[in-house]
Each structure stands twice: as structure tokens, then as C-alpha cells.
Image (cartoon, rainbow, N blue to C red; front, side, top):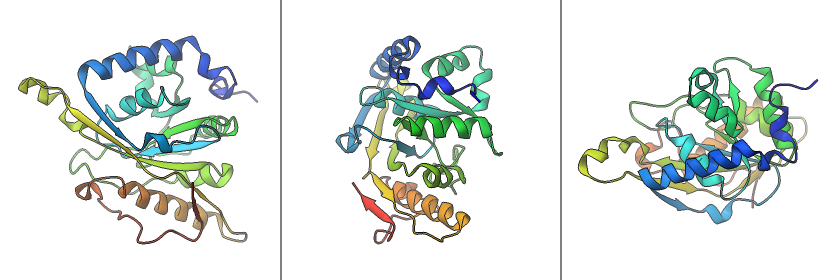
Length: 238
């Protein structure tokens, strides 16, 4: 049965008029209001199902990442359902082509939409933590969804560390734009052995993915995770 987000996984999705117009506006706003320094974007695979996952410290994070990704390959953001109720931002995020997810529960519609996007060979933009760490701005325990999506699809994973967004908009008072850093890590796949329990598989994938995310962040932002001491036996770096 078709669901509300089926259009995101269609071949013509990258050419949607709303996506193209909003991408242009988004990029212009980023260019005018911020300075963005990007590392490692050449590592982004040009095709195939891909989950780009990021740390979340400021409401601006997903907008910056979506703006940068729009010039590289088609990627669908997964956004909290609360954004949809905004009189302006809700329409814009939906028009861009996003998946709204109900946090704290198994949102079947959002899960199916995410699986459809990956099955079509597109990329997803996900914050595994599910919510922002407004106090220390360091990594929190991730939710379960990331491991589940990889288990079902075998999608490539790619971490991206974001920092500097918390300076927005305070530094405007100093007459300068905030410098925002995006650091892309190594893309990798997880080859899951047969016979391993589902919960173990999903927890292993999520924990290792978050360790990789810590590896592309400043040490002060590691929080409850640490970069991996050595590659996991299931991992293949690309």
C-alpha cells in the first residue's frame, strides 16, 4: 500500500520543483549568514543506498547538512514530527522532500518511507540521537532506528561531525558570521554474520556507527562514545 512519503523514493524525486527551488534558497541563506568549512566530502559515494548520520547540537544542523548535500547527491532528511506543525517551516521542510518521524515510538510510516528511499538507491540524513544535547553539546546514547535500517537494507554508513552551529546567531553581535564545520568520515558497510540475534545486530551496528561519529568530532564532543580502537570484524571501509 502506498503511504504519504512514497514520492520520495521515485526516480524523478531529485527533479521535484519544490526540492530544486528550496535547495537554491537554502544554499543562498547558508552563504549569506554563515561560513561553512567542509572536510571529506569527496568520500561521499556517488550512488547506492547511503545513510549519512550526524550529531545534533543546534536546530541549524540538519539545514546546513541538507544544503551541502544538495550539491553532491539527492538526500532525504528525517525530521521530527513537531516541525510539520510550523506554519512556515513545516511547509518548507515538507516541500523540500523530508520524512517526518514521531519520536519516542515505532513510527511505521516513517520507517517504511526510509526503507523506500534506501531501496531506491538514495541517501538518508539521520540524527541517531533523536534529540539535541543542549547542555554539553556532546554525543548522547543513540536510539535504535539506525541499526534497524542497516539490518534491513545493507546501506552504506557515513558519519559527519558538525560543530560551530551553536555560535548562531550570537556572533552576529560581534560583526561576524559563525564558522560551521562539517567533517565527513569514512563510508563503511557492516557485513552481518548469519545466526546473530536481531537485537545484537542492531545494537552492534548502532554502537560502532556512533564510535565512528566520535572519530570525526573534537574530543570535547565525544560524550558517551569514543572512536574505535580498531575496526569491528563486520566492517568494510570503502
